[in-house]
Image (cartoon, rainbow, N blue to C red):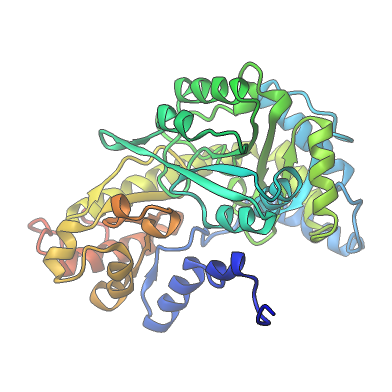
Length: 407
């Protein structure tokens, strides 16, 4: 008889690195650049719309597929920005954040014996969702391309086998900050069509790209609209990560499959937040443009400070995150160059929390020396983190002695 307790396939997922590192920040008083949530609120009009919805009594169950006003706004947004046409009644589903959307999609589309192909590093919920579905995951790592992380399409092709059912792709990519190019995505689309794969795309950072990078939804490429479920949310775009309002868009048959799984997970969520997100999608994209510009400045601010402290900073083309090579800093501080050990020791050594990238992969060896920092924080928080890091590292440039001077 099997012992009582957690089933074996879920035993690796009893905790998350984000919970552990946030708790460590609380215990040590360290600046928390580990977990990717902003420390400022989203647009005032969106917040006021939510308050009005609460006051007007929109506090009971919304319709199962989501508030019709929000589904209409999502469809309008996808059409205006990407030329993708979705029937809001059958091809748009509101979920409790993108995390639920992805989990429900994998529960609906993969089964025991199926393989789900992931690009690693992957967001930690992906592996758990594959396990929940009873499927198997197969991973292919990103590769270094100068200071950028790139998609290895040849390795992806080699990984596709007779049991491969679903490809789960994240761009803009967490944790690396890579935004996949049109060329990379076109090659991947050809692979999906050739092997008749279903594709789930995590696009929660769709509006948070920097410099010349731009987000290309995979569903816009030839042969992909009919096989792709596109997942996004309001959390990152509108700095409302605690609202947990996400959505899944795609062909009616696939969305119906996701809805069948989703309705027995949470049924519905966030009733008064849904009209507020609908308002934001229609009226607050100017705020998003300013927000993106501010995040780009914050990326520069933190990246310059990390370089001054001796980190080997990698290019970030989008998201909230910048990745860095820790080996020189670890040597300076007398710490391990293993990312997990380094991140556990850094709060005591320098008063800053980061996240090791090696926890987001199946093969940790190439990623042991890489950690992720979040720059979606107020400037004074970033400056304090930089000051703490540069104060304890021998790489600090002459004259850098106060927050912000290295930026």
